[in-house]
Image 1 (cartoon, rainbow, N blue to C red):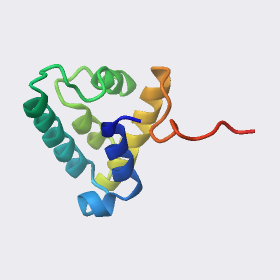
Image 2 (image 1 turned 90 degrees about the vertical axis):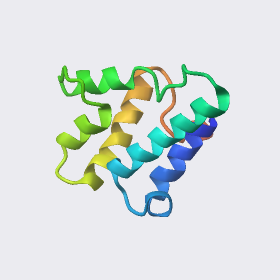
Image 3 (image 1 turned 30 degrees about the vertical axis):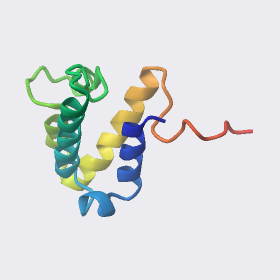
Length: 112
């Protein structure tokens, strides 16, 4: 599990500790800041939050908008907390579609 996945998993498991409460708006702000820091530290302008995730969300919701993935998910949820958990559901679906393990499954043993 890389560092970014590890941070996301910690936030997913204990959102109150890292964000104050489960909130997609707060998570999105955190992720934006994290990516800006990574750009500044590495000088690599190709760092992206899960390449292809934006397209996946647009296809998932059948939206051809310039809105970001976070705004699209939020629009289809009643509460910000619901949008937070929906994000992680969609992220797991996206990773599975990409042939990658879901968030946090890298270190788990396969079932008997």
